[in-house]
Image (cartoon, rainbow, N blue to C red; front, side, top):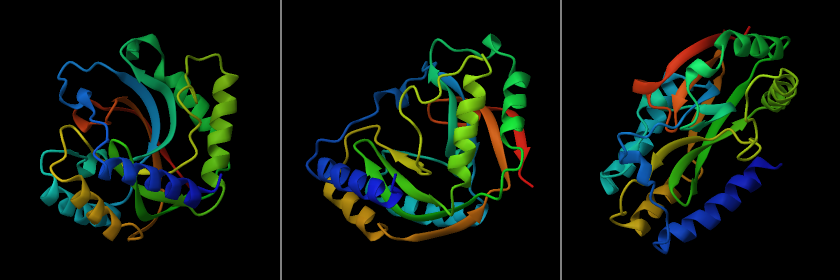
Length: 227
């Protein structure tokens, strides 16, 4: 898959939908009793990049203060959603160590992963930073994880929603009616090709998380340092 093309297409379609006022509102964001949990392997950007992302978030906040913005602590790239969030899943159904073992096996000989955050894209209900892996390392790791988990007999729902192939980070979600959809897209346009920086991934985290990866409800199950 050509990532640039994919992001461009997503942006084109979504920005038209948002400008026309046909965007979607995520009604679950304000639901205190949202009990959708899952298990995710993820990457977190470094502090320098987070600071660059906050510059963009601050612009968006001025235009749309009532929306949901990801704090620094929650910004991430999903490597693999191992068990998709659902209200049917709880941590006591699994033994985290078995999952850690499969991940460790998948990480043997993994080369350095570098990600370049450049430009932004959108969905009909969110704004995202575009991430571009510098080579095939992340894809290869994902394929290994798919294979090893499928052969492990462990509970998993890898690729059940869609096959993950991007490296984006969601930073804003629509939780109420937008004040000015056109203004929002104007700001997005300004950052469409903005260079947020490149970073080398130092570690991966395995977390038990809610749908929005909120720090307050996230439990780190494993931390994997990349050599």
